[in-house]
Length: 329
Image (cartoon, rainbow, N blue to C red; front, side, top):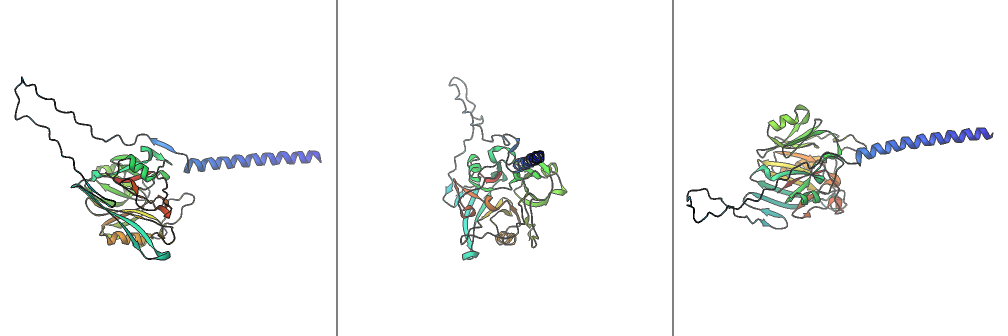
């Protein structure tokens, strides 16, 4: 009897040990996939700040002065017009408005930034900690401040997955086509596209400077998407269809160098329920967009302007860390 009990105890210990080992391995794999950061590229974007010009030396009085010599032209510093909702210079205009629809439990609150610029160089992207990889996150406002952004919205949260075509500021970071992406071109236009029909190298050859990989497409070539079906962006644990009312972030284009950024708050009773994908597409249509694309939403949806978060994420005023942003400076 004693031997039998001893064997049972040994068996229980072995089963328990194996179970704990399996559980530990599963737990580690989940943490490795969703929590532990993996840096693939450090210092993703080199410092693009312009070097301070060297002052021209004064000519020696004993030397003849060539009156026809080139004289450095000093550009006059432009003072922009700025208030809580606007920023404008001759080369850049940003107008932000807070909009509401409905009331009570059906109320929707969202923010529209109408942006016009002279050159697509005003529209850039940035990564959390300036590093490319998975599970590397910072708040949108922190990435924006580190990038000297005037206006910023969260991007596609590329770091939650390891696929998609990722081109940022003209650099290729990933070339794993799988879904409908968004391409932004050097001529100041943007267009949704099917990643599986091309490659990162081909897009660069075509003049693409930024790609985003989330979706779905809301408007393409002036035609709004009517049926979103059961739209699922990722197939990871906990993901679900996103076509119903949710907080949203999206980008649209009215014409070359004229873009619309929209952030919709949601999941906050009596403040904002969020928007369905169909409602979101309609807002971009009503604003005159010919192209529009859905970006990462939910708790990620954030709009930053001149040092402050404009919207109220999830009605709690608390940002969720993201892997990347789109910004204007």
